[in-house]
Image 1 (cartoon, rainbow, N blue to C red):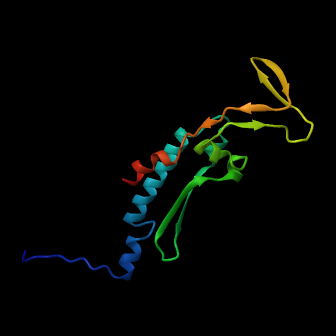
Image 2: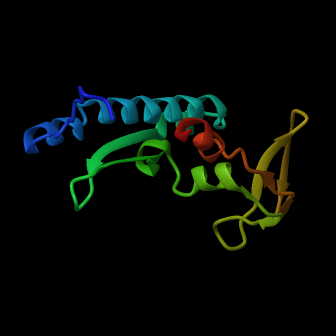
Image 3: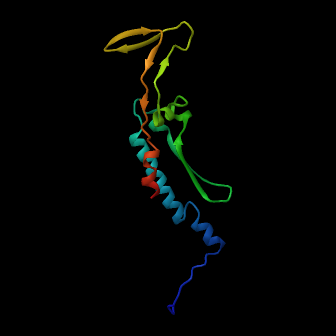
Length: 139
């Protein structure tokens, strides 16, 4: 056993600083969360930009005082509710009908306006714009 040993015993103030958002643990966690946000924004659907704009994070503490952060989308910021989930996870094939009974759908195909009572949507593949980067951020 070495003769000269240094034992670090943090007091309550030292532990509080170590486990705060301003301490080394919090800064490291914050850097990782910002990386996840950035990666999510680069791979999310960009049709209108609303989804990319809605990706955000929060810095909190749980009930025991541990650091906690959440990364996700804010439906109020990004437009329609559920849009981000469909973009992230994908959707199965489904029928699209007008909102009003007896109404028609109007859309443009190859430059021509088309009306229909219903259409069949083939479904979409999910982009997994947040979960695909978790392993990189957590390691």
